Image 1 (spheres, rainbow, N blue to C red):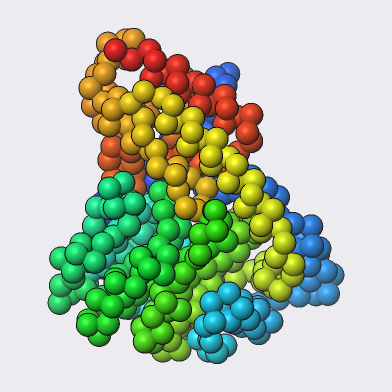
Image 2 (image 1 turned 180 degrees about the vertical axis):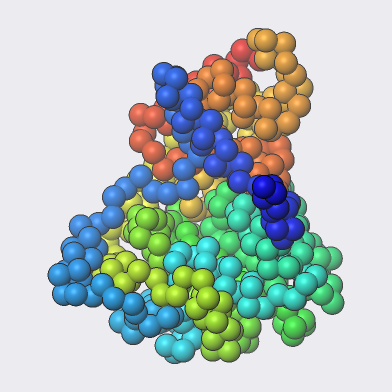
Length: 402
């Protein structure tokens, strides 16, 4: 019997380092180690009861069949109203697509638009799936390192240098996973002004963490900041983070009808429609009271401040205060070169995270997984008690280095 031959298109793609770290943490927990996992990319809150009830009602109403490929009319109307309400953006129903999570929206868009060798500008640090999806679609990720010195945001000079005749898309994620950094209207304006001069370049905005911003940060999205670019903007969002609905798998986007139709072709040959019951729940999320968003935002902000202050109190660790999301992205440059009690030299952020996990039972993700070192990501979407204990362990871990 011949051995399995993996397709060349995935030859360079591995299981994400985040999942590998999660698997190792689970293995240690099974061995009895009290590991605290700070790698989760989902809220620790439950889905609100009113949203759950809408799903139950849909089940009993028999709404359990296939829906239209790109989403139910009710959900598209709710999405259209959300874009109008929050950003003054007008999207017709033929300019909206509903998918099985925002990851599928990204996949649909890149598969529908990229030719082999087309370039996509991606500021680093970036969500790990971006570069792999671009590569699967035959594109070339053009990574732009954006460190703490620029607030983890791409500058106009960096964008200008990255643009080439092969550039097809520029991808923004605000607030960002992993850094929590966000682009306000003043940050976007000079970047978008530059893109007005490049009519063949399209803009993709991943706004998934839109509703998790702090201290009055005024969220902005490119199509609203520069209306002249709306005809080549794809605005992506979903219900996963804001409404604690990660498992319901509903993402959506608004964009030009021709692009949305092409994305539907890709979706039609992969998943077809998103789950009918999940779509009914998403209608309730978008159309219902939004009060819970501010309540949960306040909880996340308190935890953010706890973690940022705790990290900055540790010798060798430096952590900016993020504008949004529920992650910190701290530099560990100050501890590199030190020796562990076992005599090992910490040379990289991955070495540091492995040491903290194996010797001090805290799972974090090294910055290299997100394209930028020497940093590490912590998700503070967990209990305050666990965060306090994790910070204490991390402080002990660093204190033991020489």
